[in-house]
Amino acid sequence: MYIVVFFDVRQNDARQKAVKGLVFKVFLTEGPQMAVSDLGCKVIVRSNNSLSPELSVRLLTVLVVVVSVIALAFTHMGAWLVLPFAGLEILAFASAFYYIYLHSGDFESVLIEVDNVVVEKRNYKVSTTIVFQRYWAQVTVREIAGKKGANGKRGLFIGSHGKEVEFGRNFINDGQRDLLARNLREKIKVIH
Image (cartoon, rainbow, N blue to C red):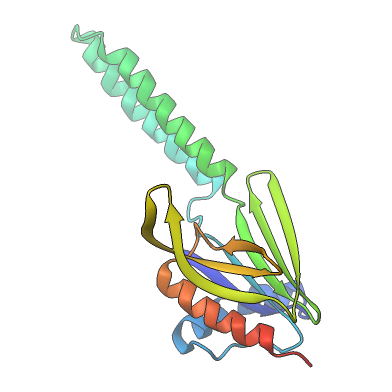
């Protein structure tokens, strides 16, 4: 499950936290109607990190204890070859949890200001920011060509003047992509 949040950029942080769930429901259920002002809005997409770092350490500890007890029991019965594989299993679990922890802060955002459309991406430690002029910015949804041609996946692209960036590649599905593209087109074309 992924989170898509619309909020007014002029609101303070406390209000944004209070309205996130409500605005998300309005966005997904009512479609084109959005609870934002026309002077600017921000869309943030990120993965739903339901397991906190503290809980992941607890879960990993439980897994290590269970795997170790089972491996030691088999070792005690004479099947000592189980022990190295149990160690590999623990290493694989630890690596997976570490990878998830490293990417728990990843997000992509689109900020629509009076004159600019700012796309920001964060993947682990790498942050990129691309700025487009709002008047020329275009939002398109199209097939993504893979190494062997079209692979049936679609992407949402924001761009202008031959420069474009894909938005929400790993965070939203095709239905959310179409709905978001429609909403972004409406927000971008409204210029006062």
